[in-house]
Image: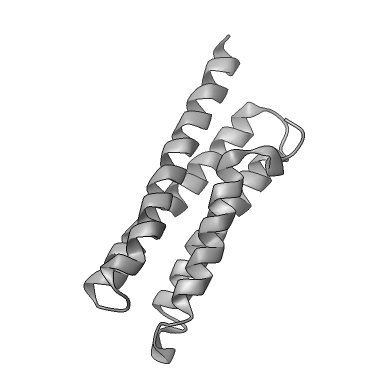
Length: 121
């Protein structure tokens, strides 16, 4: 791997973060420091932790940061679900980001498994 930018999961998580920023622009102003900030922070944390982990020495540290990214993906999924339940946006608007969040989660788990396999070989 040359860079974190070569990872498909990083690319998808960056696209997801951009999408979250777009969706949250339509949230009410009173949510600026609430749900808007939380969604953006969680979405931003996923590619950021992938990048930071990829820059570390060795797979063990990389895996640790991928687990942090997984936690942020789970947080993002929960916040998206809650945003729909409290009618901050429509369920239709949330379908794409929720699907992409699930895909990022799946890809992160696969990358962790792959790195663990390499480490034990």
